[in-house]
Image 1 (tube, each protein chain N blue to C red):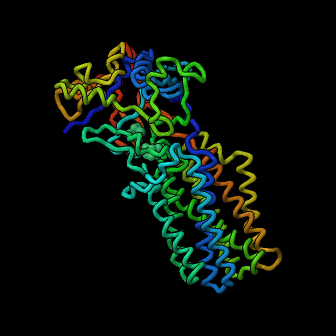
Image 2 (image 1 turned 45 degrees about the horizontal axis):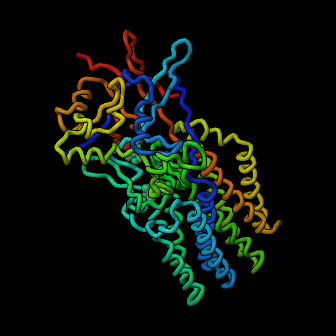
Image 3 (image 1 turned 135 degrees about the vertical axis):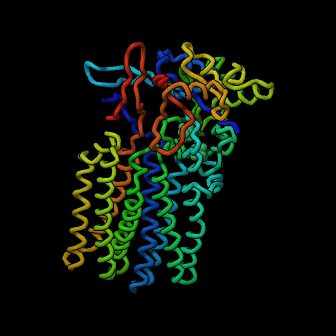
Length: 285
Length: 217
Ligand code: SF4
Ligand code: SF4
C-alpha cells in the first residue's frame, strides 16, 4: 500500500557545511599524506608546504561552518559536549592538530606523524558526524563512514601530488598511494550506493545516483584513476590525476550534503479504523 | 518516575489544525514554524484510498539523537522525559535538526513576521530575540506543566497543566499524561487501543503514540 508523503530535502546545512567536509576532509587528508611522504623520503620543503596547506584548508572549512551557524559569537560553546557529540570531538581535535602541525613546521618535522594522528581523528569525527545524523538516511548509513574517510585520504594524497608539481616531483610511492586511495574511494562509494539502495532510502536520495551531475562526477572519478595509473607508468604528470581526485571528492561531498540529503519523511504503520471500516497495515512504499 | 507522552488517536483527528493554530498562538512562532503540525497523508491506491490526518511534532524521544549530537549541551532531557533547548547556549549549528528523524526542529536566522517586514503590534509585544538563530521545537508546553504542577494540578487532566494543543483539540484526538502512572489517561488509552510509534527503526523510543484501532476484547 502506497503512502503519498514526500520526504523533503534538508535545508539546514548548505554549501557552507559542504565546505567544511570538503576543505576539512582534504586538509586532514593532506596532513596524513604529508606524514606518508615524509616516511617515504620526500623533500622536507614539500612536506612543510603540505602541512601548512592542510592546516589552512582545515581552518577554511571551520570558517565555513562559522559562517553557517546562527550564533557565531558564542561558537566557543561547541566544546561543551565531548561525551557524545562528534561535532564537539571534531572541534576539540583542532587545537592539538594545529599545535602538532606548527611544531612540525617550526621545530621538528617529525611532529608530522603526531599531526597526522590528530588529522585522522579529525577526519573520523567528520565521518561520524554525518553517520550520527539520524534524520537523513543518506548520511546515517553505516557506509558513510568509510566513504568520508576514503575520500578525505584520497583528496589529501591527490593534493600532495599537485604540490609535487610545484615544489619537487612526488616519489613514485606517493603516486601508488594516490592510485590505491582513489580505487579504495571508488569501492567505498559503490558500497555506499548499494547500502542506501538496500536501506530503501527516500526516492530523492536514490535519484542522486542517476543525476546528470553525478554521472559526470563518476566518469571524472574513473578518469582520475586512469590518469593516476598512467602517471605511475610515467606517461602523464601525476598532478593531473591528483587534481581530479580532489575536485571529484569535493563534488561528491557537495552532492551528499546539498542534493542527496532527503529527510526520513513521515510514515504511518496503520491507517485508522473508522466507523465500520477496517484498518490497514501500511507498507511504506 | 514520571514520563510525559502524547497520544494521538488517528480515528478521531479530523485535520482541523486547531492544535496547530493554538500552538502558534501560545508560542508566538514565526511564519513557517509549526511546532505542532498535522500532516495530511494519502494512503493506498485507487480505488482503495484513505486520507489520514497525523498530528506530529517533537516526539520527546526517550533516546533523543538531537541531544546526543548537540555540541553545546543546549539540548537536554529532563527527568520527566521532556527534551528542552537552552536558547542561551545554542549556537544554531542545526546539527540537532539533521539528527531528528521527525523534522521537529526549526531554525530562523532573521526575524520574520506574518504581514511583511514590520511586526504587527501583537508580534512586536511577543517577539523574543533569544529565539533567532537558534534551534526551536515543541516544548510540550513545559512552562504550563511546571506552573500547573506547582499549583498541585495534574498534567493531562487539568487544562492549566496541559499542553495547549491537547486543550484545543476539538475531537479529543490528542491526550497527554504520565505513561508511568498506570491510572493516567494515556496509560488507559494505550492499554485499551492498538498503537504504533513513528520510525521505531530509528531507535529513538519516541514519546508520541498513535492509536489506530480498539484492542481486541
Ligand atoms: S522528535 Fe526530534 S527534536 Fe524531538 S526529541 Fe526526538 S529527535 Fe529530538
Ligand atoms: S542548533 Fe543548538 S540545540 Fe541544535 S545541536 Fe546546535 S547547539 Fe545544539
